[in-house]
Amino acid sequence: MKLVGVLCVLAGWVVAVAGLFLSSAHAVRLLIACAGIGISLYGSLGILNGYFLERAIWKR
Amino acid sequence: METITHREDGMRFQQKTTLLLFALGVMGVLGAATPLRAEQIQGADAVVAGVPSPKSDDIAAKGDPGAEQTGTINDVTVADSKKGLTLADVANQAGQNKIAINFVWTLVTGFLVMFMQAGFALVETGLIRAKNANHTMMMNFMVYGLGLFAYWVCGFAIQMGGAAPIANLGGTFPLNHEHVVNLFGKPWGLFGTKGFFLHGATYDVGVMVLFLFQMVFMDTAATIVTGGCAERWKYSAFCVSSIFIGALTYPLFGNWAWGGGWLSQLGANFGLGHGYCDFAGSGVVHAVGGLTAMAVAMQLGPRIGKYNRDGSPNVIPGHDLAFVLTGCFILAFGWFGFNPGSTLGASGNGCLRIGSIAVNTMLAGCTGSLSALLYMWMRYGKPDASMAGNGLLAGLVAITAPSGFVNTLSACIIGWVAGILVCLGVEFFDRVAKVDDPVGAISVHGVNGLWGVLSVGLFADGRSNYGGSWNGVNGNVTGLFYGDAGQLVAQLIGIATLVGVIFTLSFVFNWLVDVVVGQRVSAKVELAGLDIPEMGALCYPDFQLKASDYGAASSGGVPVAASAKY
Figure 1: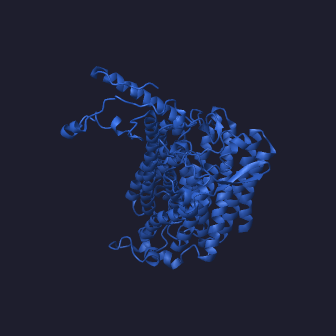
Figure 2: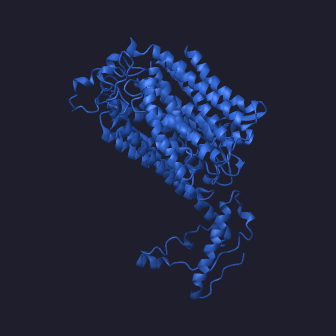
Figure 3: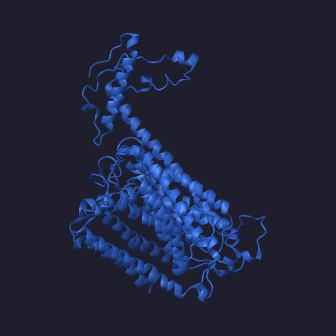
């Protein structure tokens, strides 16, 4: 699960940068960059943090 | 150039004025973007003669209380004593004076930033329990040495090895090689390759000044992590992790933003404003530190007693609020080095904006502390001291990137938003994400570092470019509210890189550290306090520690005033 989270975080960056090549319109690039940031945040705070929360010390 | 001749005493004032105007003209020429060589100045070998000069005997006898005879034509270095003082001598002196002003400015502001380590040490130690004070202090103390060493070995080269020329510091020409790959028809600068161990041609006066200034910035990023991971981080794991951030994580992003790397070239290569702009490091320094703190804190898990079985958080109050607020003041003082110093000079290339940058810094810190204070007061009924301090720091973090590009009204807004964001951030990480951050480092530096980066793309007012072109794009840095949406996109790509790449790097490396060294101390050590088991000595040996200090009391980072509501 950790690996999935890490890959998801990286994928967000790839999406944001790919947007630069997909369109030359600032509005489109802006939206794609925001989507990329969202994916990265989901990977870090959602997947990775979720993994650690499942094994949290107060649950043992 | 005609020779200035000595005539009458009555003419002396006129002659002095003429020479002064002439010298100022020469300085103006030297301050222009393209420096002139001595042979390009017409009549460079023309002799400057007949200018009255003070007699050393007079000064020896009477002194110079009015400072009228100190710093005169006598102090201009003459290259050829047989020829006497020439125009080339005056021009060389003017050029050296400009660089000297910039060297001194950059060094002194670097010293201020170095002193911020003391501020961080006090803030972090004040916000944790007395039983861990030695451990936290020693992390803040040794991160300086560990980071510095790693940065000298390879960090500086990776970051600034291809950053030349930096005109304000005389060119720094030995830093002249950036490793670039061509991808999809665009050049992507990835890392510098000159300056490992500062040997060879990088044994250069300008490079040394740049190294010192950049090194203390790196150390600021590294010390942010220690706060977020306090009270349960193995000292050995901290040492390894700090070396990594100084050697690779920080320098890599620093290169992409400041060293001529791909983020800085987004404007030139993709038409996005002036590329990623981060004047003094909201992203490069604070977001890198804050996101690394998040990566490590997530892996460490919360302190024992931070959360109840149902997942509700407890407050673990710090042991010394006086430490915290004194530390905040020291940090605010050091920030006058951080932001205005990032011009890398006080003479030429728009550097006179240092006053504007300093005022922006001051205002954002002020509004940050004010909005945090009001938020806490209205929400929890008390003006919380630690969050007022964190609000000040949040405002300062947020204004760090835009400080060189915005006006005072924008600085106030940026600081005000930062103060609210830090309160919301602390609540989010504490209650929702349940990432235990004893000092609020993730919210102060991570969240507000990203806000600072974003705010450049919104508030940059298009009135500054520091010498004609920022990141190789002519014109002024302009944000969305002043007409350039492309700049906002560049800033968002920077944020995506911080969250996507830098976080990942930090996470993966510290994951490896966890496997090899182990990141977290044992429960027994944590309950006893890290001072004796990890460091071998108590910070306060004469104190009588209460029984509750050893048990599962409550949790921290979160404002004390908020505890009543949990």
